[in-house]
Length: 198
Image (tube, rainbow, N blue to C red):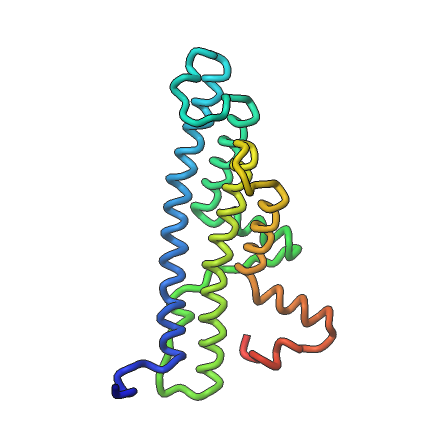
């Protein structure tokens, strides 16, 4: 095969990173739909708690309880905050003490094949940060969903695991800030040895 028909590694990385912002937008739309569903299920569960005969219409093995109903409503409210990434901003503000990351978009990933090495490394770093933002949003949504899974009695779900997903997702979404914190704690830009173009 002729190697000239394939793009270079940086172009592949940028093409993958350009998919991340639309996927985040798709997750936002999915979060809105999930929030409506969970809110509806929360109100139905509350209704079935107050009227025992209505519980036969509720699916699942678990009995309708106030705890389960409020977990539905809590997750529905939190997922609705993902629609505009408000919840991501709240987590970032909490962990960083006032610094909020903005989502990387396609304009930040514009790449000129004839650019110099410095520009290419900066774009590659931005592409990696864009992919990490997608992973961060997915992890935070998984952590929020685990809150309900814990109250519903599902296996492999706990509040501790939920917090781990939420905190690690917030760190991944604003990984550049996290790297700066590590550099300030070490007193030396150790990570800058690998990528000085953050």
